[in-house]
Length: 348
Image 1 (cartoon, helix red, strand yellow):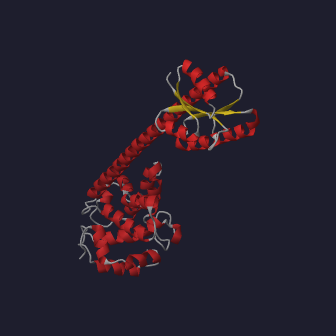
Image 2 (tube, helix red, strand yellow):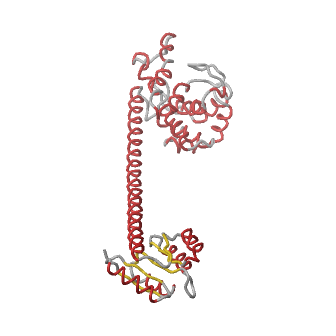
Image 3 (tube, helix red, strand yellow):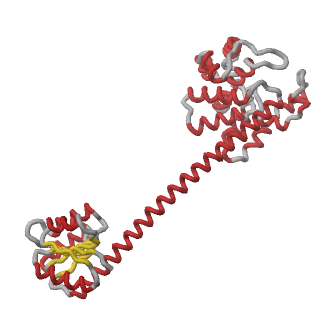
């Protein structure tokens, strides 16, 4: 057993009586006649329980109780009181005392109370340690889940980027058109105050905007000359095909909306739904401008890249018809060097 008990009482006879009885039960006892002596002992020994008289000269047992609980809340405290001090005993319980006994007391009652309080203390410490251990394990598991989710997120991004690069290569795009318009979209969206998950969703929508071209035949997609009316009908299905592919994937529902509407025009003459003005999602209104930027400043089979100034002129001309006026104005407010830095290439 060998638990250390501190007995604090200004009456030597009571101290000796309690110590003698508790020693026979296997406890190690330390004796103090006042609060100052008690704290000297507490600083030197691993006390698990304090038995303290309430009424003592100088600082009282109430003072001792209050200060013990500040130093070590796990130490059990048993208060000893006369019959006339019952209100004070109840106050002690309120301050954190674990129990009290009244004078004159039965030694057997003391044994039983001490045994119960120590067992209660040990159980509380065990429960606290278990809680700490559990919280630590939860933190570990949470961190592991966070790392796993980050890895999955990166894997998703790498997979989507690889898929988009394959699509761009299929259309013989120079570099990665889809990655450039994603970067352009992110720049514009950030300037509009779009951040966090909303920005990420718009960026993915821009990256995946042509995913629906998977469903368009090479004869149409790679045709060197102009498309006829029937071929245009087929080509214009690709926003809906892309939406159908991605809209059932939970984390891609936001991008799917951009994919569905990325060929809408501000004046309502776009496709597939003929949406107008702010009916068109903000991501698609941004995309309309930056897609024009990349299309005009990139080489095509039928022409070389056009100068950046030609893009600015195009945006001014179609401001309010093809393009959202506010988005067009924001585009025009950004410098050529900002766009070049974003694209990673120089314009002519």
